[in-house]
Length: 239
Image (cartoon, rainbow, N blue to C red; front, side):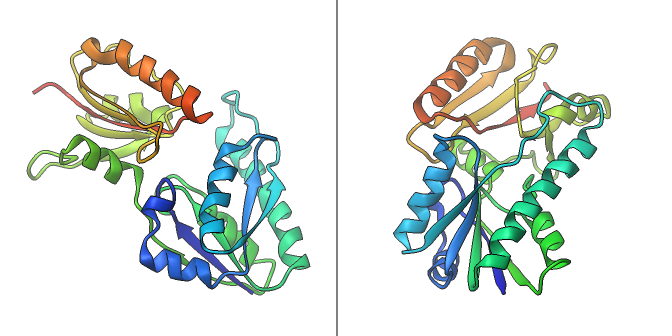
């Protein structure tokens, strides 16, 4: 049994030749279905259909998304339930299976961790092929370098943004945004993008205090247009 973990950026236009060749050699794509009208699953189907590959969808297990007190434990329980759902399919079907990962599998995605757990239960070999990541797309769309000359860029989640700033980080790329809390950062510069590389893409850049209303409106527009929103942004402290 073989699993291929394939980074697909934000859709068919970002599928690299390497990933395309791998996908053509797969027997099916395994994916979760979050809702009855899961547009991200629909986007995965579009990619798979382009390469003549069937999609097998399993219902996504319930997850506590209300900021539980023990967040790591809640995520671990959710992952365990996903692994169990995937295992059922893998035991029932033979062949090479693909997991299509938004962006790049190395950044804030747990597919590799889930497959590692599956490999402890089943005789599986697996590999990982990279995709275009959200920070790469953000920098390209805004025509910027993510850091000043010789300086670092700190990549984190919105949940950890305040801790990063308190620790002295002054150039922060934020993913898994959830809600946008930028209070007290009005003088920072921001480069923001939602649904990058898609028809519902929105971009905003400027001083946080000046552009925040436009940014929030753009976020709502992206969600209304696509049915979902994935955004990422770079924050830089005033010099």
